[in-house]
Image (cartoon, rainbow, N blue to C red; front, side, top):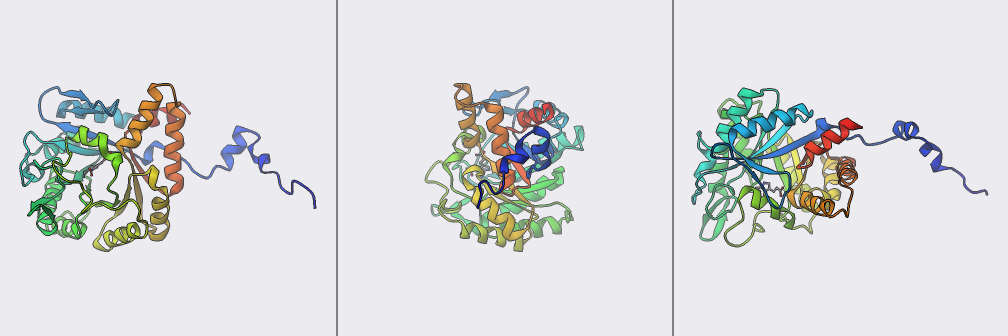
Length: 325
Ligand code: PBG
């Protein structure tokens, strides 16, 4: 018996050797950058709790999309802030709605950039819930009709992928059949399949102006204590026709990402959400963390866990840093 029987450090002696045996790559072509579009002319409004993120009016959004594209990021995820909200969230499925107009403008100016649209009512309802309220409860089946209409209107505007984030039961099937009926057989659905009721969405609700006016989202989003249930949610969405399944948030749920990838073998997206972003930004601003290395380590860890796609507000910075090498 001698020690050491094997020297792990042998393959760590130079950067080139370490590069040869590296198991996980992070490339800009895995990233999706979320954008917030709002009505008006020449609006560029910082979201206070998410430094670097802004609400943009359409022409500024198009300009920003060109910058994103030039960094080698293949896709944006679009959220809309309507001029008016109502009980039924009718701005969500209006052909002249904010997202529909933004998608048209983006696809006209920059057809190569993939445009993914968030399909959910919470930005459009005056009560801020992700569905239609009946007797104080978010009614599942009525909401499905609205979501299906919303997804079709996004596809008609030119959306490349629709991404339902509402967590109603049966929405993927409802959206798939509505899309197919309207001839959009090749529009993929990226479903927010395992979406947890998370405190990490706080800053986003400022950005998207979508804080629920009463109660919380626990009657539709998942309990953060549950992992088997997350896998069941994902399997159901796959049965209903989801093309890409998402886990959200990312960093506190790496175990879920890992299980979803390995138990389903489906393309898996992870959403590195607003609260995860804001924590890093706040610490970096105080000099407590080195932003670049923390962001690249975080995104690589999400990839290592099993995510094929990472949706992140850090995407532009990360793409820049990755290009620098
Ligand atoms: C809409 C939606 C939310 C997020 C994405 N889509 C908020 C929520 O469910 O309250 C959160 C994104 C983030 O925090 O970055 N349903």
